[in-house]
Length: 237
Image (cartoon, rainbow, N blue to C red; front, side, top):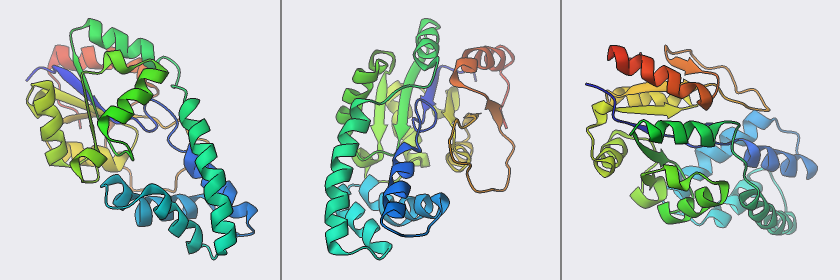
């Protein structure tokens, strides 16, 4: 089946997804806690974010609990929450795309492809769309679906099915693009073709068991790889 569209993850694909984790690591360490970046990132992502992504918990309540996890006093937690709210506003107002993302999306649209976003987010789709407007890529995207809207951590097979219906194509005719192997594995379970974008990260990720995936160095290489795959109707590992 020929490819008719592309579903994108956004963190580490469109922009740096580690910025907030690095900020939290610095905040905890400045409070006198000796902890590694990977420990902070893992705790925030596994213990607190899932409930927020699913709309089951307020973001700032979760962040307060995260700070308490490291033994900080209530006074320290309150001070960090105030600082974090200010930093979050700054981060969202100054979000920057990786190089060539906008140009790549425009080229893909010129090929007649339908483009969608399926991602974990603390935002409903409309709020995420407003962020995409600020960074200049909203007009290239045909459909947006977030975990907050679905009430489930993304991606999952049902989420892929929903975004495929929004794009008006079967899942098997859509390519899934993400920087994260665990998310690409779900795409493979949904019998989709997948491409991994190499992470452009400041802090190395902990080692994981490698899986066979087609990988591109940046999103700017996606158009060329897409054309090659579609020309041969090739199935990606």
